[in-house]
Length: 524
Ligand SMILES: Nc1nc2c(c(=O)[nH]1)N[C@H]1C(S)=C(S)[C@@H](COP(=O)(O)O)O[C@H]1N2
Ligand SMILES: [Mo]
Image (cartoon, rainbow, N blue to C red):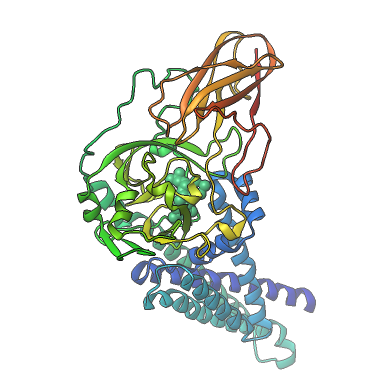
């Protein structure tokens, strides 16, 4: 073997040594995080940090490309970056020690940086990245030492004449034995630690055992509220099917027993509530349709649920908002914030609530357990804070929410909209008399009328289901004599104020999409 390819071969093995050390780093940190500080996993902290710092267009691209899998795509990308960076660290340690160890130290420091920018840090949060760095460095140094021994025993043979083919084989075996043991243990320990961490999230068990008081008042769902048409969205969206949008890479796990809500800022007196205090105020039932600002015309980021909770008006009253305040900055345990106009939370006739249940069960962890906000008429990002921990009464002039510096409006009422659910492109229907059906929503105002237009025909009023209230979507349908071929189905709504849905198309940023959906369907 020539000197050059021989050297190249060792560079490849040093890269492998780096990757194994990186895996040892992460696995050690995962194990430490599991034992002492669950929120201090370097890979998840760095991932969350990336979510918060990536520019908005990139985030939109990720959601558009990967949809609900955006977080998995992020982790895969991060994993690839870790492999490449640790391979480079391995080569560096081999050719210019201790540069590889320095690189691991930098990775440790970056992890600490990402961890401390997350909300809940304790002194123990430093342990996982520090122990990870130490373990990764030890393995890297040992592997590179054995690799050098192996190289010396092959390359240095003629020159020094001190090593034999036998020792060459032995050095080689020593390198691979350590690499194999370290690599395999890293994978086993890392995967197990992460799996145990997910499975033993005791909050999940607490949630399952939790029995909430029955609501004092319930919502009556009128006859005719739900149409029975295949392909049409059900009136209430099941929790498993409910869209999920948030910046949380791992779902926060909050024990209701330790949950506290702080109401502070421009208030007469600061108030702190426990979960029991909240329940003691009495629960009432509310049907409210939630919509995400990222919902495209015709999109799926909208869902309807039956919530139980307490009016935010009553909660704020306990603290006494002061004159001059015009906004409530709600904060989640993970630091996420939303800015909601004070009036949207306090006006009579607007049912803004702190919700504790969703469709008859405690809020699912992904949907904000144990307490979240639900405000009819405003997009989720300015109102629907999950894993709620603080309501700060303040002003728009003084405070800014998470999405405001990221290209979204500080205030964002929902642009009312309508959607065709069936028929759908890609699901051809047979010619003959068929229903065209969908949903329409104008939270806090109500839908007056939905109109449908086939191809270049006239706008024809559709039949509406009986609305539950003005905060929920309505279903609509129209019988149609479908003829073979492809057709355009257009839909638009009129709200109870008599306003026509905005025709002009606009993108989701900065304050929600608009436009009339025109969908292509095929009839066979
Ligand atoms: N803590 C927290 N709450 C949050 C968010 C978030 O990122 N973090 N996203 C908001 C957005 S943009 C929307 S649309 C709704 C979505 O609620 P869902 O996931 O329960 O459907 O939650 C809101 N509440
Ligand atoms: Mo959203």
